[in-house]
Amino acid sequence: MRAVADSFIDHWALSIVQWGLELTMKPMDLSDRLWKFAARVAKVVDALPHAWSGRHVAAQLIRCGTSAAPNYDEGRVAESRADFAHKVNVALKELVESEGWLKFIAASLLSESKIHAIRDECSQLCKILTALVATARGCRKRRRNKSKEKSTEQEVLKETESRDDREEAQAPDDGIAANLAHETLRPKQPMADD
Image (cartoon, rainbow, N blue to C red; front, side):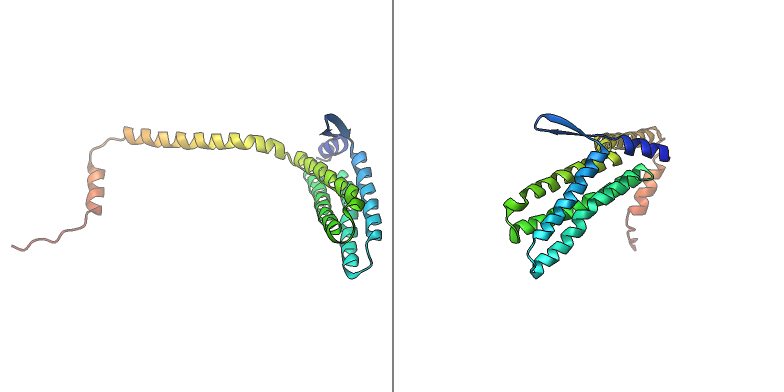
């Protein structure tokens, strides 16, 4: 089991197509990029005002903005493909939270021009990790097979209906079952006294 996980985790390469160029990212490249993002987050936190709102946002952002890299690295040594997907998904959740706090900072604490680059980097990292989690979980394959499952389910339903119709047509009709059903459903009429 561990060998299968190692083969996927250690040898994946994420292809990114952007502006007509295809880039291949290795696991260590993504790790380095996440650690650089964490360092940039620390610089943004240091630049925040020391007012109550700045301190609150700083505490939130430093936690989520610096935790994506170690969570991803922990995923790289996962015990299984599912464990890898889970750990990378945790890193993704932290990046999504960071993206939210960066939006808040741009709206109220620092100018957009000062944090535009880090917001863009966070958005790109979210897209990369989203694709990585989907690939690790096999979601892309499942989406393609879902339409096949629906058509198969519909075929099974049609087959069941046609089989029921055939069985009804083949059953001998002596009228007894129909008469019994008719009599049990018919209300009893009072007898006329003559």
